[in-house]
Image (cartoon, rainbow over all chains, first blue to last red):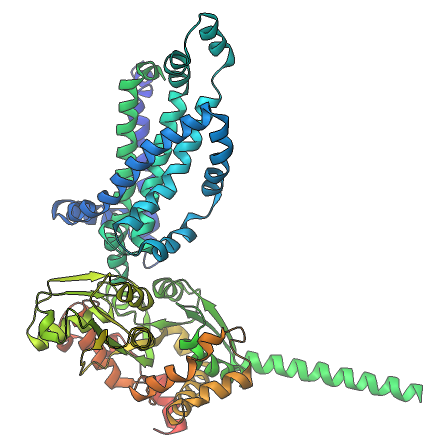
Length: 254
Length: 331
């Protein structure tokens, strides 16, 4: 009985999943699979040290700027364009091709080209984040709006609802799950964009830490840098999920 | 008559086959080198490509593998996926205790501090000024640190933009005011905007820009193969120092970098002329002198930890392969 109750605890399974992954990492580091591959414990110690000596804080103060600006622009413009494309055929024909091409293009190859247009400053990094995040947000919002069930729209019209009521009461709530999914994917992609920009354009923030630790062969620190960006991305997505619970309480049942 | 032709053709086929087998055996006897290059083949690597072709002609099977960066090339050597690498992997040797050693200095650092004369005219003007270098722990940062020590100045900010060509472009656009870049890009800046930029004096920098390194076990097991390669490198470097035009003629003779654009083709001779003038290509493989000046320089750069005086040269370099080749060719 007690075992069954314990088995229902999701946190326990999550903990076991982490333990299994980190255990495998530790074994791989101890074999070692490569001389340059650090153990989990070495990486963890480096992670804790850099968290408390302020290295991560200083780095993320720089990284967070293009990330926040880029994600904010992508979220506002992405939801705006996505909804407009879903509601308005002309807009759809005009823009959907561009966003599908952007979505399908190898962004790591495009980012260095941005420097030829916007130089090496903050603008280039913001654009790198936007290039990564925007197509995902736009296309998800567009799909969410476009796939509103026709019978619901018919219902509003049969009750003589206005176009605004149709959008506000039916289309947007119906599309909200895909809009939030787009935002989550967009933020995840934004993290990829900012790291790519900091590795490919100019090494600042966390990109500088990764480049620096690689160049001086501090591999536990380098792995800790990369782990930190993964952790931050995961935390940001969890926060967004909690925000979605506030806006859409019905999703808590999931 | 027909019988005679058939006999002759069989004889010719046998001869070709025997020669082929002999060539294969020769190549196997002379060995194989998987050379990891942390760069693409370009004007700057033409000298190396010439030496590789000459090594191949002596029966060594040299396979050139291009990697995205020097770090990746280092990992390929550490993990035994390439035999010889090019770079200055002092940190990897010291921190990871990787069983690799440097054995041949290919080139010395040739960088030039370039300033926008509207803002700076001498080193002392950079006291509190902004300087942009390649990256942390790079050769350009070490030069910046050395010059700050020498001139008793402190930079207002030292920022990082990787790639000489990117920094040159940023100088031209006015995004940065002072930087340290390579010879080709210094010339590019001087040509594009005459009078707008100036090169500050730089003395006493003689560290390796690129050196060859390999796993210790590979060097021991393939002493003869590595010996042939070093001999050809020395011969090529000496020929270039004698006449930089050697690169141009050998490139044509060996058919190297055939698809080099015309614009870049024009840069080949000036690049090697400038390099020779600045003592960029050592004629003796560097050896002990190079090893010691590298330890001095890279400990200032932060790539090696500890004071250069406390470091043992043998922990980073092996001199046996070079000494053997120099014995054969003469100093």
